[in-house]
Length: 308
Image (cartoon, one colour):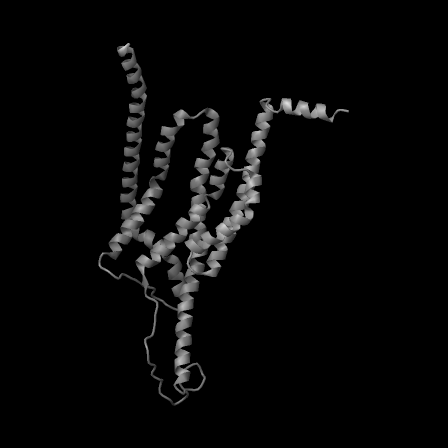
């Protein structure tokens, strides 16, 4: 009796050990892929940095600065900036390998229809993230940088004009009259000397925020497939979703109304798109249930009730 019970315990623990061993193998391969991607990205981290700060460069050149410059405020700042770039883009570069290892670990426990259901979302998720990141880099970041840098310059010009006028000069914007010497102004003049770390932080913040927000259709559609949400329920929660999206836009973006409006508009459109996708999922699921005969009894009862 004791030997039979021991054999049952050994048989039950063997699959668990095999799964843990496979999980360890998948994790090791994922880590190796991430390290290789990080090393590759570190070798090209400087061009990636130039690409990320290109919106600032463009705006500075538009304002007449022929030699745009970003500064470092500490000796080790550039090194850690390049390390951060290599970490983030190394993860993005190794994501196909990591996703493949995760899929190979999970797929044996799924049915064929479940595999067919999840596969489109696995493909759509990185594509939507790239779309959101591109939208952030080419549309949102230039608008935000133009607002902040232009705002700083406007404040400096207005302060100089006000200081000049209060010193008894004519209201000509602080410009000297013909034959007069240029006026001397008191105080400290401000000029934009962008920090590489701060500029990179705000750029990456936009990229990650919009990339994650573009995952909303994938998340809600998966929840709809699992029966956790419905199209009617998402529609009824629309007013609460508007408030939540407004709070999200205020948190993940700087205090720039234009950027917040853009993020709110994009996420709200994605929310409405998610409602339509969930409705489509529900329609397909109902058609499948009808094809399997689950609604036959209900249809028969309804037909009998309608008969006189």
